[in-house]
Length: 372
Image (cartoon, rainbow, N blue to C red; front, side):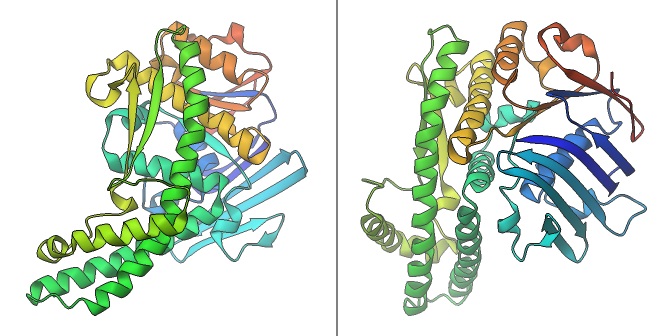
């Protein structure tokens, strides 16, 4: 997968910009707050139809525009592809090769990306919500049906919570309606849990090998799925559904008292262990950083395994955060294999001598100049 052209209109601090991005490595260099990260974000938005930095789509629209338009041209294994995404206060419109997609889930997956930024360290040491978002975004890229199941689950969860709150305020516990919500919640919840378990299992296989390489076989990384309640097995969906329903019955009285849904994928977590010690709690900063790096490199291989092509790699001011050894490991991984986009405040933090066919773009006040 190779991005050859990127064009933006009224996107954040860019009024209009059009770039030829046909090098293996494309580096955006310039002072802070000039728009470097916005360029990487726009590629991410073209892949996922949403930003990794904000939940408010209106923030993506430039001051002088009524809508923002993003365009990309991609070389893929089965031919060339043109992507267009427009975002306005009225919503989003997405096109693949000029054909409008009725569902955004049909658009997601046409372009695959892996983003690595300093804040990704929070995947390891941050809140469970950050790890759930990580799972949702990455699984959604390779399994668009996951996004549909997740959307349906979230709608049912909202309605069920509203029902529980109303019942709480009425100081009653009418159960018949809740049984209906339970069945629907469990139906979609089980689908999400099975896909998360499968994804984490594959991620573990890649991350374990990569982590051993980075640490010269001195550390063993384990990733464990931690659902909101203990599951005996994940293979049989009907058994999993029964377990989910039983757990909902067990916490029913507590949910009525608190007015909120207490079990389900919205309360899942992801745990990391190095040599059997939990990284979130007991890992050093170096171990946490290496775990995050191993995760991102594992994502690259997992996406390649799932879709048959390597994704784009977006490195947002991350090379300066890595010591020389980790930076070398990262460069060796993507060199000659993954088209990579890098932002940096200065080229001194990038080992240009290790990069082949790199293009350098200079970014200043929303303007991008030349390649060298």
